[in-house]
Image (cartoon, rainbow, N blue to C red; front, top):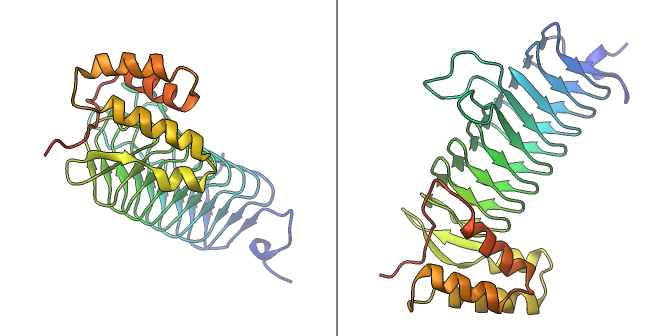
Length: 273
């Protein structure tokens, strides 16, 4: 007879070398592979698969059908000097793929108290989500991409390999951060940035086309972008002009709202050099 961890569909499978502590909640069809460790306050939803050597700790919840690869570490205490053992959480949405050596930390008592990762994310090897972050749906973090604490990442954002995002920054939906870029401020929705001490380098046209944005919508975004980041006048004046001229464009108004929102970081702007 096959061991319990190898039995058929509908059975929660725990490899004999894995450790699942008392109190952990495992739904049906969960598979805990060799040498994994699951803490007493962890919740694994239906269909979660921990391939092997995965550690899930703390108040961590993994949504349905998450796939976690070897040596990922999820839910260990936040890397924050003021953390004093408070009850803080990490929530990962359904259908998320977490590759080797990925780390995700829960929130802090001085922050949100929770780190939230959306659905259908793809986190490649050695990427990192820090404490108190809010990450949207359908994001891609390439190998080695890292975000500091309190960072907000919108839906459909892609971070290139070894990109680094400063704490408290915001990245708008459908934006792209180039490989090895160091983003120190806020990146507008649909924007693209690159470079060490990253600068805004236009719109994420490739991503917009891949996601089915029409030529008309892309054309309006381009026109709004040119006006918004022209050299004449102040940014506040240009922002008002864009809001008036493109009031019928939800995409452009999303950028306007993003810039007008309160923020702890400066706006990522085009290079004037």
